[in-house]
Every structure is written in structure tokens, then in C-alpha cells.
Amino acid sequence: MDKFKVMVIQGPNLNMLGLREPNVYGSMRLQDIHQQMKVVADQYGAEIEFFQSNFEGEIVDKIQECLGEVDGIIINAAAYTHTSVAIRDAISAINLPTIEVHISNVYRREEFRQKSLIAPVCAGVIVGFGPVGYHLAMIGMLQIFDQIKAVKNAQQADKE
Ligand code: DQA
Image (cartoon, rainbow, N blue to C red; front, top):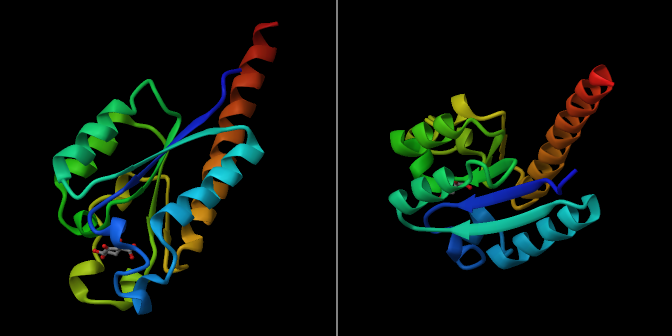
């Protein structure tokens, strides 16, 4: 079986992690978070790719490009989480297992952050664990891959 592939998509201002409101988002930089995710992916034998954009349309394009290319998406759509019907529709259109991550506990913050347009089209949501949330999302994604593998193996066994 080919390697499973995860796409990690980071929305606006997440390129500023480490500098940006460290009391809310912690002191880890985005590249450090990605490095740790890569270690987990390598241990599992999965491929992983990273994408960050401050532009909604670029994020929509990247999600569409995932179709047929990757097996799952981990996304922190940042501020677009609360506003973007376009990102929600793109996730819904490609129908790949998608995990939403938020570094901060958005449910303890301003009211406008307490609504996610994306959560209803995601397999799961991880909120409020700081940068460790990305690690938890990786574990969740690898669990989903194990399930896909088990279903494929069972279907193969049925054929034989
Ligand atoms: C965030 C929460 C969003 O409300 C905010 O706009 C972000 C980051 C988080 O990871 O906690 O940029 O998605």
C-alpha cells in the first residue's frame, strides 16, 4: 500500500506564531510545530506537507488540490474559521477526513470566536491545548488512517 499523506493547512496570522500574543498562542514558532509533526509522521511512515496562507482563496485552492493527492487534512483556518463559507464548502466538496485545530480555547474567548463554520464538515476538532493540539491532531489522523487500512484489508480478505 502506498504511504498515507497528510496535508497541514494553516490560516492567516499563524505565520506569526511565537511573536503573536504569546500569552494566548504560546511561544512555539510554526516551523517548530511542523518539525514535531514531521517526526510523528515519519515514525508512522506517513508523508506530510505544510501550507500557510493569509488569503482565503489560496486556502480554498489548496483544499481543492488535496482531492486525489492526500488522505487527510489537518487545518487551523484561524480567523476564517468563524467567517468562511468558502473554506467550509471546499472541505465538504472534497470529502476527505479533516481535523480542525485551534491553539487557544476559542470557547473561552470573544463570542465571535465561539462559532466555527468548519467544524460541522470535520471528522473532529481539537481546541485549547496550545501547540500540543497539532500533535493530538496527528495522533487522531493516524488513527483514522489505521481504520481506513483495516477496512481495506477486510475488503481484500472478502475478495480472496
Ligand atoms: C485560532 C483562533 C482564532 O479565533 C484566531 O482568529 C486565530 C487562531 C487558534 O488557533 O486558537 O488566528 O484559530
